[in-house]
Length: 590
Image (cartoon, rainbow, N blue to C red; front, side, top):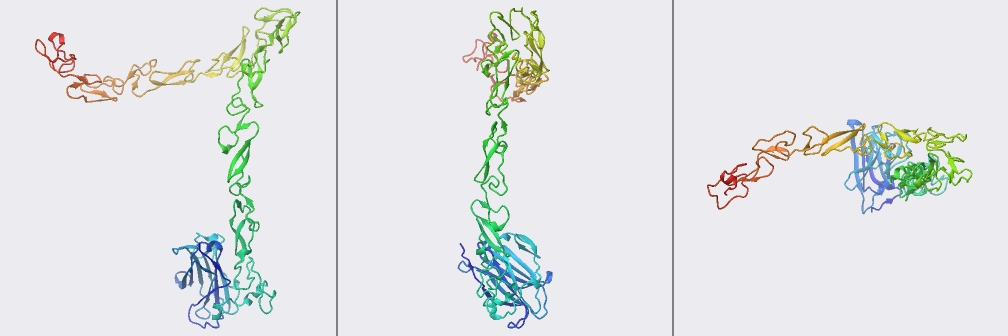
């Protein structure tokens, strides 16, 4: 890795006089000091300094020099003294300093456009910043703190250097030039009596002629690497999992990127629906689910998206809540149980699998579980123990010791045996003492259970128009619409040639009579091959003879009494369907 050196002030011995003049006693001039921050020093292997005089198309190059590292070192800062060609020369000066890579390409640059101030020697400091790496600005702009700004500088705002001579090229300027800052004076009249420590404040504290040189070492901020630029400490890199999330350089990289508020990057908040959260290696992950919720789809981004208190997912993602007869299920607590009993029944064994198994018209469980009728009132009707019983279809529901028909919505087959007020996809009524369900259009009670109502839709391929009536056709697709089964497209290679849907697509489209389509005939000299009529391709001595298989037609009809080499197949002797007349066609000689 390239080794860098910080120098208090190395003034390279070049005085550029933009014309002829007295170099020993100049009253007008400009001292240019070029610096680079550590981020630039880490990658640059050279520096180019160019001075243009004039503006626009009339501008000329007055100075251009490229400096490269020697034995791995590139010395900073660089200082260049400029003086006008003649007194009163107020042409614009454009100074451009560029950090270079190993192939001479520009990594970052800084530009200043200014003028001489007659009778004064000014000092111009140029800093090549790491935040300007890779940024290219316009001809009248320069890069500062990572953005392009105007490059024009008012020379009257630059600090003065009271005297510049040839000797000043080889040594730092006299410390007294910076006396006007009030921060540090070295020599006679010094306010501190010794060289002050350079701090990052935009001033030349140690009076070496360079502002803030070496001051990056004073930028000690928590969990970060910082450099001094433009009189301020700026963070250039954070350590470990830390980041500068509040943009305040004075507290460095104050935030760790492993928290729920800053996970991986600043401001990335870990939050998941119905679940806790954790930050692992810069990624937000869901933690334990809230009570009553589960991660049923396996997608971490939506957290625990599923309620586990539904009939479809009861207690866990894979368990449905189902109960036995005469009962409605309930999972409001995440545990499957009987929610409501139907038809004067009760869940006496607390087992949801058999539902409400016990009739409450039973003398052993009359009106409630375990309530047995005594010998004086041995009969149970409507959940009440009674002395007399009523015939089938009747009961004494009004307590007048008279039996009445139990055929109403509230007393159906027994006192207090009410039909359900609502059933799925239908209506429950009492008919001849029995609760029956009238289903909505296109629904049916296929399992005969009152508890789940009309549970099956009659517009599916398995139940089309009626329970268990499949919508299917031979060699064709079926589609059920509004309870009617309709035949769809035929399967490849088949056709509905008789126009009847009951037998589906009954015809195979591979014969010469139906080749590729119904009633698509092939001529006598053609065959049907893969649904297309074409010439026969049987070998010599063989023919399709109107079928799909090559048939041997070799041979000839012999004279009496036959031949020594007869052919077994005598139906096609010499041609299709040619039987020899001899002995009723029993001979065909090869």
